Image (cartoon, rainbow, N blue to C red; front, side, top):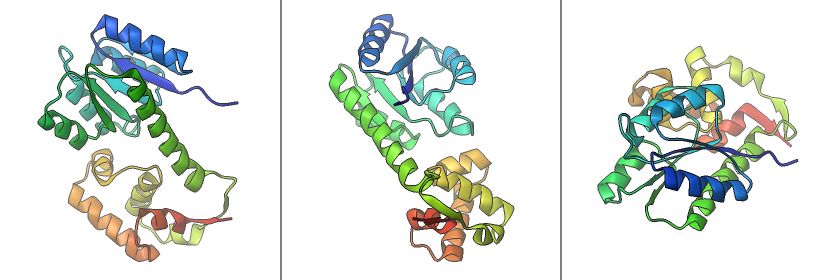
Length: 207
């Protein structure tokens, strides 16, 4: 049975929250909707969603503050974020992507475009999990290689397997981006890998 994906919508526009929630529920998603970042953080601690859709211009803490908080918490850093906002300047988009959002949609928007982006994000996540993390496809865990890694290298390898980017690893482990890059290079050298995909495969033997 296909698992229903949980989406958290954060927007202080009551009308928009209602319309987007109704549309996405009709498409088969479980929707939680709140009007502030503070309320969103309460929901996150109680029931972690699979994806977050957030406005940027919210009173008190805004959407940029929200994504910064998510990226600083190892429990939430993996959650994809879509910004749905009236802030449409190129500089705003760049800031959003630099902070780690997966997509940036400006209002007014076409709900079918939002749905397509959501489905694409979940599809890509599913591909990665199926190809590299499905226990049915993993025949032997490469314990000898894992034992050769230092504790810090093991932690970074674990985050790489989960799909974390260098900036996210740095935030999660509270180390500099330059240090993360050094550790990734060291892991690539130790495993004779050319990229992250080969690095992940080096830990497992696949059918």
